[in-house]
Length: 254
Ligand code: GLN
Image 1 (tube, rainbow, N blue to C red):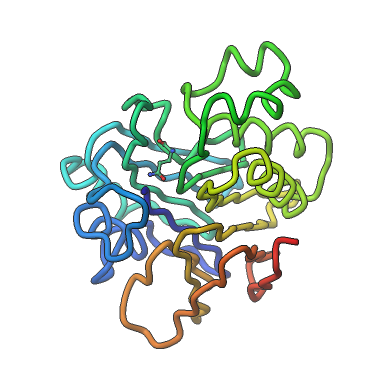
Image 2 (cartoon, rainbow, N blue to C red; image 1 turned 30 degrees about the horizontal axis):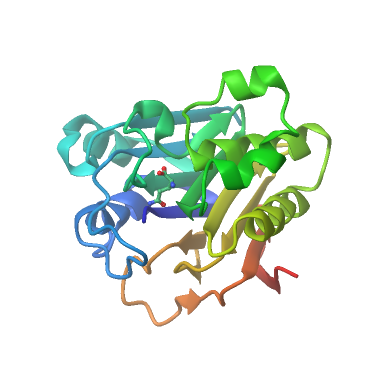
């Protein structure tokens, strides 16, 4: 099962400070994850980062290769600085393609999304929910994967003006009802028109922790180091961080 993280803070930090440099960085979690559940041993089917630049624009970089093989990315990550970003490494679910479009994070402007887990019984189990999407959306999914459908469902709520936390929680709750036993750790980072970020992360049958530090809040599948401040998120809950300086709020999903 993939691993992902998100960071939001008051000052820009390098992507490398969370993605490649810590002792148990996402780069390490790609080849030596500590808490994989439900199959999979490495996260070598691709990776991606999505970030908000200092001018507020959204950017992303994804490749369907193991993160450790992309030397250009390892260099780029030391140069790109951001106050809000998401990163992911992928272990493709059996039957789902290995392609750049299937790599999280998915991005639409300043909306950045990742899914760590699997929808049980996909695609049939998601058919009723997917029927809410218009034909154009279904025909232009980034990839034929469970994660891409979940992203389209979240995006539909955002387009309708729904609060980001409500959008994610609604999709998780309904996907879980439609496909019991699914692993649904979702991450959404979104900036409003003033550039203020909101970060939403769910824990559904998968590992998730967060750390509040001087330079912001980091949410990650696995703690990036042995800092005793890492707090494990209880199963079936959502973590919400609103604004650059905010502290995380953890609430049960139902
Ligand atoms: N099911 C998703 C995919 O195949 C996520 C995979 C995972 O979390 N391991 O892309």
